[in-house]
Length: 385
Image (tube, rainbow, N blue to C red; front, top):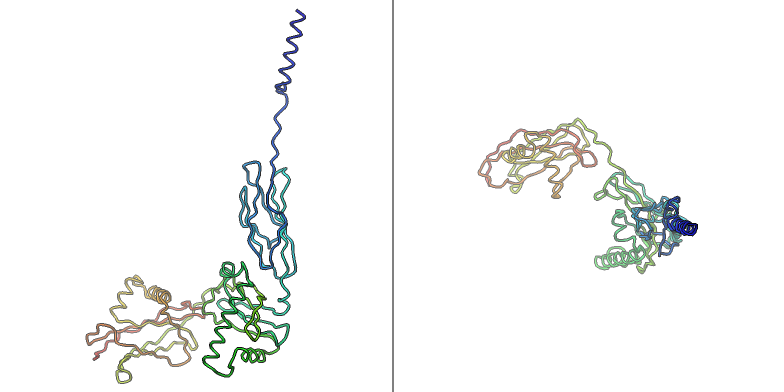
């Protein structure tokens, strides 16, 4: 009997060893992070976009953080993170991108960005932005021997076409500019007979080595990020790819300020003055020095536009006509300094009688309607072509 008890005790002990007697809980698996990439990366001063890759032993997504606002984490998932390094306007700098999850050992990617090249010490570019224009200020810190050119493009265009290799882009753009200038002066003559002469003249005309120029605003979009870029050329058109940039944002448009203005619109028929354009419209705003838009049409076309575009609302019709003319590039803005008139040709399919109307409304400096529409009476003329 004692023999069987010993065997039973032995079997019981083996069961406890294999099952742990179910007293201990399973230990949780600690997640682990790893990467096959180099974790110390060099970034050019122009900035660059990176995709860093890693792996985690769980299906969860790790946390991706940056310790610098110029090294932005654009997006991340459980295997990759997209990082954008902004252009560097100053000294060399370093940022860390930290990949972490729970108790796992973190991954740290170190981005070392180069300082801006010494060329920025020779040519400084700055911008004073407005809503739909900007003033570029170039300072030649080296002296009269540095000839330079500037331009401004949207930040989106810069990122897509220039940022990957700015020096190469500058050299190609400079070559094209030089060829165009040289061709112009050698073809059309004028005071300078070569680019070298033009080079000397333009440098001599720069006062105190500072050049300022306003953009005309014709293609400048408000509240948009731009990059102003400047580079140098020697008298023979050679460019070594040095450049300076300035990133800026144009100001948003201010709210529309309505004005109290009306227009005296008078249409007359004067074939003796110009048979090709016998109709004349005289426009006199009630206030001087104001911008305005006007439109002249046959009575039939006016009634159709009032019904279809404005639903019977004169101001709504004017807004729609103004919009459509802008979209097809036929919009003209006028400024009143005194008497203003415009001649007009025969309307199509004229049968001897022509009935005309005109509308006009005020515009602010940013080409936005800021007044109610003034409508002329219907003028009817008996004409001969």
